[in-house]
Image (cartoon, rainbow, N blue to C red; front, top):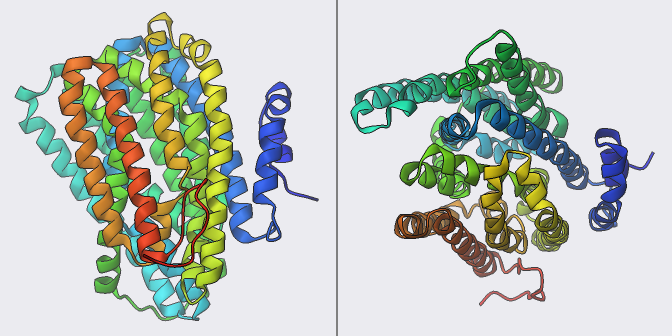
Length: 467
């Protein structure tokens, strides 16, 4: 049976949604199913895309319900805490959640099973220990700085750090599954299971007459995160044991950490860049503004998920082609630009049309974020227009310069936020984010061209020579 975006979406979405999205999904089939349509990367990207569709729907519905249940003030507090925990949890992997995607295919192709066993075990232990230490230091830091933090944030942040080890381990398990092209096992726990469980646990607690505030929401998040990650750990471990026979183990921790740390910088700068606006709004404005801005950003998730879905599917293939197949790498990389841009553009137009009625679902006050969508969407489309450049640089051994690009972009973003938010409020955050994303896309595309001779830009013809 042919595996297509249209049929996959039809399984997960209501019929009227599937019918409305048929033109978009047909376009996705056209760009994904080329002569190599049954290739590993195409299948994984398509599965990731389908999961992202369902995830965006689940995330939107859950955030609407949480905003309605808690009110904008408490919702804003819980949002800021959760976003911070997700960022720090991802950073606590110190790059291992991405470096395993580079090493595991290499070890498997070269028959280096001892090294393969080593990195699977060592990465888990390292991430669990590192994230636990960071969680402890984080809780201590919040307690020591409590006199300088708004009192309504102190307890939620101390509670939130309990999630950190499981968030970090979940990100690593996602990397291990992606390295083996287990798309459903990689993405469904984080993007489907966890948000559904958070909503279910929160609804249960409210039914048991818990106070509908940020602390209750964080308790629900803690329970959901532990259940999801432990379940994913058991599933990944079982599949790895079946795929890799027992035997001797070699640990090259020095080599792995040298590769992982630059990747850590890339991922941290990227993750901070993606969420810096929410954090900066939380630093300068009150929780009500955080709630409005976050709801607006969540509405943009319908555009973002195309880029992230393609990125999730192509990293392993980039790593494979990097080893002695430059022509295939260039052709495939150029193709992935189309995979990201055209669906993202169509989804951007859809979001601009439906944005206001979507935001009003959160509450009447949330429609204040609708005008921001027109500005924010420009940055998202600009990023999509150059494809997953950072994955291409990271998988080809150019993670250091990629980290430098993200450092400059993050500095620009934070600097603009510091300058513009006090002057223009939420508009300042939107301007800073859009400018930073356009700069990021331009700088990454230029870097790929200079380093690899590959033109990653949707409307720029390919050139083979490197300037």
